[in-house]
Every structure is written in structure tokens, then in C-alpha cells.
Image 1 (cartoon, rainbow, N blue to C red):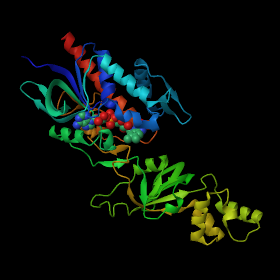
Image 2 (image 1 turned 135 degrees about the vertical axis):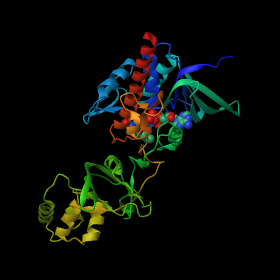
Image 3 (image 1 turned 180 degrees about the vertical axis):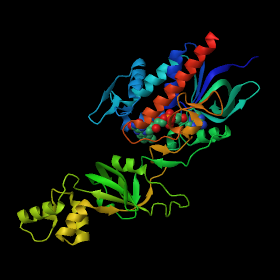
Image 4 (image 1 turned 45 degrees about the vertical axis):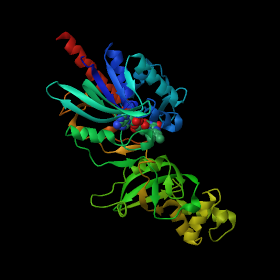
Length: 402
Ligand SMILES: Cc1cc2nc3c(=O)[nH]c(=O)nc-3n(C[C@H](O)[C@H](O)[C@H](O)COP(=O)(O)OP(=O)(O)OC[C@H]3O[C@@H](n4cnc5c(N)ncnc54)[C@H](O)[C@@H]3O)c2cc1C
């Protein structure tokens, strides 16, 4: 009996894989799509994005309009907040995952969830891809192999492994002679050498600067959160993308070249003047808690006073230049994304197709792209997934007319 040959086998039913499947099914009615997904449901990670609200794109992304048209076509309408972040109108990530799942299933895809792709190879003589899958069925392990004309590798990265992403895609890509650039967790909190536990739980609106060898690598205004182990918050997450461990260094000494400057008074140029004015109105000739009250939160004031002994100029200086030193970053379990991946130079980026294997496509976090918080990473997943779908649709159209 002839085995079924799918037009495309999609490895990973996450953001990128689902966008590709839904669009390909719409553009090429009758296209046969197979999706293998490790989790028990499709789009599991989408549910956790944006604190359950799914910040799906950003006005600053050049391709956001195409992405919004795609979402509109599957019944997801959106709203944009004052910072340009785009969410489903309901602000419920479940609506995004459900709409994608409905579109993919109603478009006719064969979906296998709770199943792990273990390998994929290309048969030169048949000109077909063969994807090996292990699935638990009726309490026992079953091996399945899927033949397809094309494969989309959309297995994500290594961040948040509890959500299914354990780096399998890189291993599969290497079998096709693709390389993988250095991988690192990103959009994650930063551990510090300084014991900041007395500030744990404090949130403050600050400007942070990442300093290395006297130069500033990154600056952002935002809300910092102090924790038992160091610092967190969106601005810190964004900063984590710039914390590289230099070649030859390890996690033990890898961050020695970095310092983080926290400016507790980002809107005030002359902190000395502010402190002196406050001292005058409090009738104090040294800085104490009453002077710093209402400028910074009490635990911050206490920590600063402990360091300066209340000396006015030193206190003003520390309010603007509070230095902490990264000892590490929170690892894969805590990170939102992966830095590094399949180099873009190995991919035809207009089609998301491998330069080495025609018919092998990549989309989403598996490629060497990382963006800041704010919808840029999901945008990358949708955009690259859709681009692969357009390429597949274009090829199908060509085959029809040939
Ligand atoms: C907590 C959290 C919050 C986030 N919030 C946002 C946000 O608000 N906005 C934003 O832009 N980005 C956000 N991100 C990042 C964003 O979710 C990812 O960049 C995006 O989901 C990547 O899409 P993807 O399709 O490449 O990978 P994923 O969405 O991770 O999908 C990959 C899929 O492949 C499956 N898979 C992996 N290996 C195998 C295998 N061997 N066999 C079968 N299936 C496999 C996985 O189970 C997974 O479902 C967040 C990430 C996290 C962890």
C-alpha cells in the first residue's frame, strides 16, 4: 500500500508553525499538512505570553500590518496600547491560541499532539523528507514516520523548557548541516554580586544603564523590581540581551566586565539641588530618612544612607549612580527567549527556506533572532511562519501551471 505523502510536515505546533499552517491551508485549499506537537495541545506557549494577555506584535515592527491582516482573517481583532504594544482585543491569550487551532484544524491539517519528533532526514532518491515521531498511545510508546515533500522546522528555542521547547530543533537542523550560533537565555532577570535582599519586593521607576569597559551598552527607563537574587522587570529583561559571556569565560567569571547603573531620579538632572532643598525644608544638616522620604522608597533610602552615612553630596550621587554588578542571569527555566540559533545567512530569508536543502523551511525562535519585550518575538514567529506559507503557496501555484 502506498504511504501518504504530505505536502508539508510541521515540526512544532507553536506560534510560527500554526501561523504557517493556517495561512498555507487558506492559500492552497486542499494542501495536506501534518503537524507534530510535543505538548498535549497546540499553541501552549502562546497561553503564557504577555502575562496571559499575549502581546502579539508591536506598532514599531515593519511587518505588523501583514500580521494583523492575518489575524483578522482568522477572527482575531486587536488593540494597541499607548506604548505601541498590540494585544487581542479581549486581552486573552487563549483567544489567539484557539483561533489559530480552529483555523488549522478546519483547514484540514492532521495534528498529532503529545508526540515528539526525534529525527528528520531527506531521501535523495525519493526526494522526500521522513520525520520520525515517538508518541504515547494507549499507555505504550509508538513510533511513527511521516513522509512529506517539505518540512517546516518550527520547534522554537530552549527557553521555558516546561512549555515544550528543549532545543530539539537545533539538533534536527544540524543533521541537515546547518550550524547553530551560540545559544543563551534572554529576556530574563539578572543576579547580582550585591546582596539586595533587603530591597526584595521593591519596585521603582528608574533608568538603568549597562556599562562595560567604561562605555554604555544599553540604557532604558522603566520599572525595576528588586528580588532576593538581584534585579528584574521589563527594562532588566531587555538589558539581559546585551549581557554576553565573552568566549573563554564561564558562568563563574563571565560577567566580571559588566556593571549596572541604577538612576533612581531619571527625571532630575541636579540631584544635589533636590537633596539640599529637601534638607532645608526638613531643617536637617545631614540627610536622613525624613529627607529622602517621598523621593525613594524607604528600603532604598535606608540602603543608600547606610552607604553614605547621610553625607549630602554622596547621597545625591548615589541616587543617580547606584551601581550593582551582575553575577549571572536567570537561566533557561526563567528566560522568555533564546539568543542565537540558525544563522540567517544559511536561510533564504524571503522564503524562510534552507540554502542547503530545498523544501526545508525554518520559522520562529529557532532562527538567530531575538527582540526586546513588547511583541517583537511573537511578531518574528508569525512573520517568518507566514513567509514560509507564502513561499509554499507560490511553489504550489507554479507546479499547477507547469
Ligand atoms: C513566559 C513567556 C512570555 C512571553 N511573552 C511574550 C509576549 O508577550 N510577546 C512576545 O512577542 N513574545 C513573548 N514570548 C516569546 C514568544 O512566546 C516566543 O518567542 C514565540 O512563542 C516563539 O514562537 P515559535 O513558534 O518559534 O516557538 P514556540 O511558540 O515555542 O513553539 C515551538 C513548539 O514546538 C514544540 N516542540 C519543540 N520540540 C518539539 C519536538 N521535538 N517535537 C514536537 N514538538 C516540539 C514545542 O512544544 C512548542 O509548542 C514569551 C515567552 C515566554 C516563555
